[in-house]
Length: 209
Image (cartoon, rainbow, N blue to C red; front, side, top):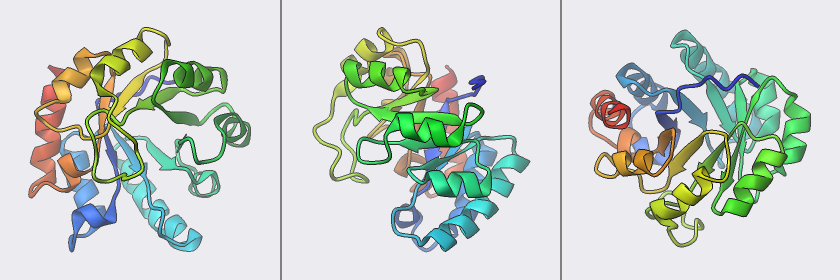
């Protein structure tokens, strides 16, 4: 897979975080503000609703020339022709996901240790999400935060891009990049902000700097 992707600001969808606002409108604002990757993540939608929303979201991301990654649901990613899939430890095994999506789509894998990361590379990952870095309310089962030091160890052990995730904010985003990440994955830091466009702009500036 050609992984010349700008991983700087990786925004993950979450309906609860946007509240009464339209998720599509909030994502549009985030893209205009500089989000470089969007991940569709929704554990509660039916398959049909996820495909319907995913198609609308993919139309949007394609119009902005930004890749769309689907969390966990390989079937949905294939149905909407998304650019990639992301799997975690409780999802479909990465090796199996790679076989299903083929060589031309991106595969991301959630990891928390050097061994996890090295296995992900062997299984065909194009990038890894490393966390939970600082503790996150959006994933109660994430386990204790691993901190940026672990991210550095992982970065030194593999040659594919790393996206830092878990409690990433404007205040600590630069530290995540300094630790070895190519970008930061966020939910509330952008989608929960009163002005998602401004929040994405500020985060992009911080990461790029």
